[in-house]
Amino acid sequence: MKIQKKRIWELCAAWSILLAAATAALLAQNALPAQAQPQEGLRLPIIMYHNMSPNASRQGKYTVSVQEFEGDLRYLRERGFTPISTGQLLDYAQKKAPLPKKPVMLTFDDGFESFYAYAFPLLQKYQMHAIVAVVGQYADTYTEKEDHHLGYSYLTWPEITELSKSGLVEIQSHTNNMHSITSKRRGCTINKGEDKARYQQILRADLQLNQEKIKTATGTAPVALAYPYGLHCKAAREVLKEMGFQAAFTCAEKVNVIPSGQEDTDWLFTLGRYNRAHGISSQAFLKPILDQTEAEA
Image 1 (cartoon, helix red, strand yellow):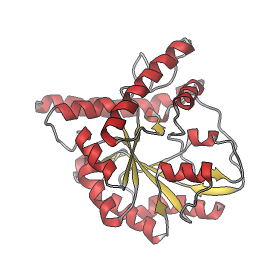
Image 2 (cartoon, rainbow, N blue to C red):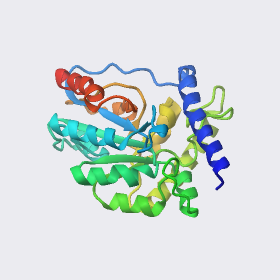
Image 3 (tube, rainbow, N blue to C red):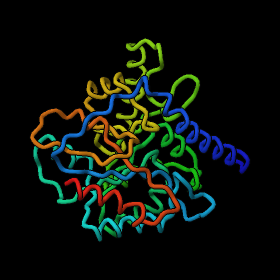
Image 4 (tube, helix red, strand yellow):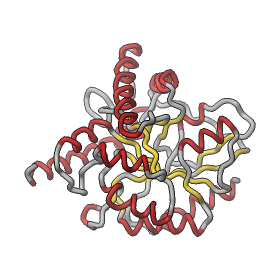
């Protein structure tokens, strides 16, 4: 790939992220209504990461430094918080299986190869768990060509296989090829006026393809979806439930409440997360979130 083409790709990726933020407010007609959180239940903060780089010129709202991520892990440990998997959360919610006293979740969207190079060794060092939501088409592209530029490259399927076998990384879905905002569709949400049955057929086909790819690589089909750009709708949730998904991650910044003594698990499909941006210390970023979690517990 020529340098000029790489630069164009990076600019397009940055524009896509900015466009997502600008248009998110316009999706209110598709968004699920905010659910009143119960007063009692275990509190669960979820941190959302994307890319990681040691290069200061690349760091920003969606790319943290390696030192910042390690600082986050150290601070979580100092505060007594334990990263858990989606599987552990589901076992607690559905089977009353025990959880650590102070659970937290660390999620990585998109499946950047920087996770393999920088985050994974630190997870091994601190023996902490993380969740990576993979875009199947991205993994296909970077498996087929030798382009390991950690500023923009994505995980290959062999790397995904290795990560899943480590016992520290859980692979979930980020759609196969719906991680974009265009004039035709915004993430994996239904368009205004679009035929619902046709939309759900399109979404179902995309998700099923990614399920098959990830199961081939890891031996296990995902049980959770990270909505592209956090955008979601009722029609999408119906498809997720029909397909056997049991949880979904949004970008709503909130401490989640795991209800006690309730059979209804709809709350699992609107899990909120705090975006981790560059330029703020681990304590400054995490302390308000963890303080709120402990105060409400």
